[in-house]
Length: 362
Image (cartoon, rainbow, N blue to C red; front, side):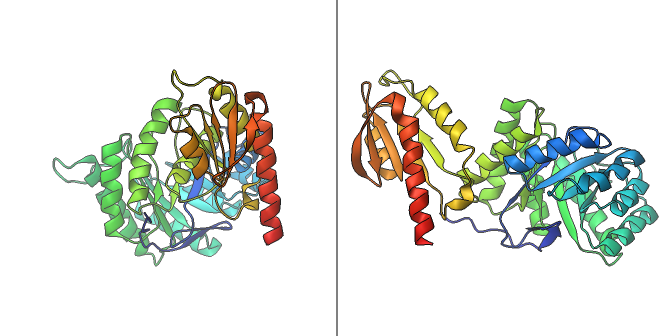
């Protein structure tokens, strides 16, 4: 099954292109005070190493805005300045090198203030994200309207105002705190305009709840071809947001970030410590440069003889365990028997051999 992407405009954020046929980009947000340059830079670099492509920073005051210049000189990711309440902070952020500005129509909506920001955006040639949240959307005058209708109505009113200033370098987000409102809002806005859409839920909660809610909502939208960038918002460190986003995109074959591990859930038939083997393998795989591989690599580690041999044969490299030993497969062919203790070492060696083969073919 091929996902047919919604046709959207292309917007450039730093050196990242979003929209059109460009890959769905991963975003996150720093959780430090932006004026704390040292710790903010550390967190941005951690996000970069985790696979984040665009990072948003909270600009609460002019000290935060001024810090952008120093931060920008020390990092490589595009920086999005998140502005609320005071439009002048957007101007200051632009002057200090922001690669994109996010405005919330729920708290910055006066025409002349928005016009001033747009003029600065034009001069700097950077985009605007019109980012609405269910917690701050204003009453649109629609009686008994749903949350999704409120979000879409408020968004399109804001879009028309910004377009009236001859500006269309725009990205849109409509975030609710539940799956159904989020789905409805994005489906409606996707038909109302052609601007790139940044997907996400807001206030999703802890890691477990947040990842499940985000996976359901973002996965459904991405399957419909809706979405150009994503963020998985979690009450947790930002690198966990990136890990979750990568898994969502990989599960839909929209992106590839490295070898994919297929493993069984284990049951009473499993006679080896499969959980420990998989954890050790994934830990060591995280250090591999996925860019070396021209296509996704599938590694299967299976714990019993029911589905194990079949899954291992279908993978590029696979192991099917029986009692205290397993059979190693390479492209469906049996290579040798291996012990649980040697499994990770042998799989990594096989992977390295495959990498060298691909490099020679290039």
